[in-house]
Length: 244
Image (cartoon, rainbow, N blue to C red; front, side):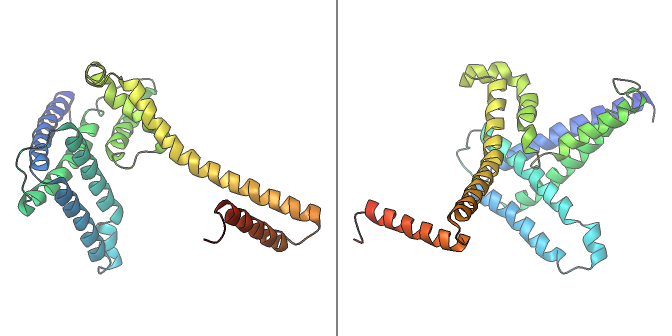
């Protein structure tokens, strides 16, 4: 495909994605959020159950990973719409519209991946030399598939990238810019990761201290732990004012 055809294809895909996304927004805001989210989750569960009844060949063709990626993609889109749109005065659950929403989400995901390829294929040169086009398309495809599956260590980078174009509006409305918001998301992500890691380290330190204490007392560790548990129980009882 020549360069002009690629540009035409990319422009057509972009228009299609805009139309698809606009229709998805209409469908999402028209339905009660709890009902909509419940329907999406129920579809995920039913398909997962159905996968268990098919043979290995079919299971590989319709992989669970693809189902999860599609569901995650849609859920993040639903979240983005609910977070940015005002609630309409009237909402009504409609299963037919839910079905349409799932189909549109799948189409948008596929179109986004084709768009990533169409806008990268004509890259002739760059920082990575002849391999720039391949790296560019892989990076764009990763951005598409990262929806709902982002790496926690890159949360700040992701939000900084997507929010920077809206920096002025964010400061005007919320009094805080894209960089600060991105940093906040990264801090929350780090708290989850490092919180667990720090807890494990602290537990290991306590265990090693107990082992060292048992060795110093020349007693089996189990005996020391029993004494420690009994002592803690007495302290708790005293702090609570007795049995009553």
